Length: 239
Image (cartoon, rainbow, N blue to C red; front, side, top):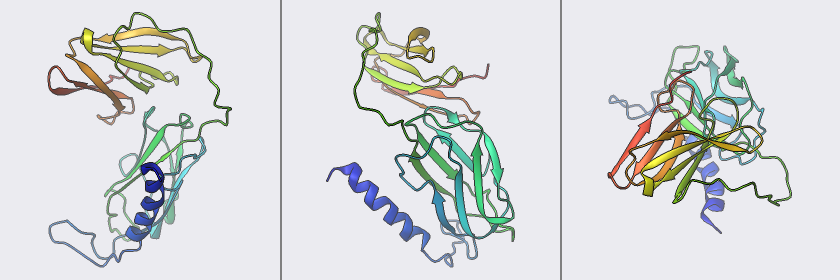
């Protein structure tokens, strides 16, 4: 059995054990859950779900009535979309829901962060919890058709995908360590790419990852520069 298969079996078991733990423990230093704090009973989609519907709501259920969630207390990130906006429902009940303004990107990883700002109607705060699942991709045959090669990218070493221009299409970032740069390739929505911004002076750029690190809702980019023994985070400014 490979590692991913093993994780899919063990992680839900770990969650079940975690959620079943007694909440009666407390810590004066904040290192444990406070007595009487709301307890998380279930999440939907499930932890590590690999085929959640792209337009699915996210629902979390507690053992007591909760105040409404918000962008600060019930945070949802897409690995290709950045911080997701949406409507929060269920305030005053045990189940809170996040209804995204737009569907997830096919195949993207979704991270749900339930922060300590979530509170029960009795005023008690929730102990923070984070989990992930992946949006479904459409059922296909697994056959591939090659698009024209992207030229002028000699020495391309690493790729990352994300919607960096915010138009809803999945773009590419390409690290070219020999040229000490990163090139953004903009997608027209039909899988055709054109060269966009170039990030220069990235000594030996060898790895890339996208994420919304400043929490403003758009997708930023981190670059690991082997030649400079460092990592640079590039924030994506609003239009």
